[in-house]
Length: 41
Image 1 (spheres, rainbow, N blue to C red):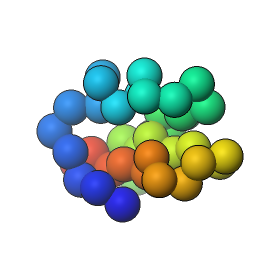
Image 2: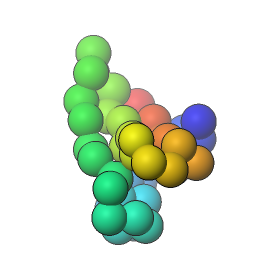
Image 3: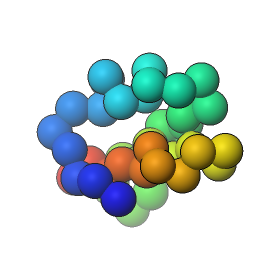
Image 4: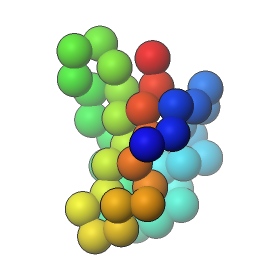
């Protein structure tokens, strides 16, 4: 999982990317292609 500053470019990488907020952190997760897991904060 990568930790990044900007999620705007990352959520458009794949059509199945979802932006989810948990415990004050923002995640981009992708069920079909797990390569695109990203955390912010």
